[in-house]
Length: 193
Figure 1 (cartoon, rainbow, N blue to C red):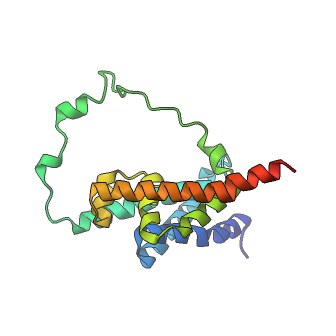
Figure 2: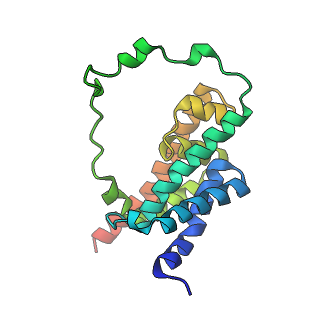
């Protein structure tokens, strides 16, 4: 007999697998990443404090698992590391004050949990992402969801930096169009009732 949390996790599995496959382009590896994320929740149920939805919590765990998998795969395929790519101690020191704090404070991002709670919005966003060409959706998700830098994305996908920016620009335009039609347009008409 399944526990309530196990049932909830099983209902999330298809969404998680779809996102993982889009990023990893390897069904077996995607299934492993999803399984690892679900096992992390089941092994430490006290880690979920209920401050966000279970979906948000699991996606947060899976995001880190996907980034780890991408980095691990890249390390396996690299033949040699160029020493010129390393940061010098002076470059690193310039980023931090003497007390160890960053020189520039990060911008305030608002309340990400409140944004993630808008499940209907994310369902529409997911549908809009599915309408994008697979390579475009993958690059957009690598940049915006996994927060990988452009160089990392270009190495992983095998494209130039300028090509990546064009793809990201087009993805944002198409997503904005889709969201305006299916989310903002719907909300505007439903608000007039």
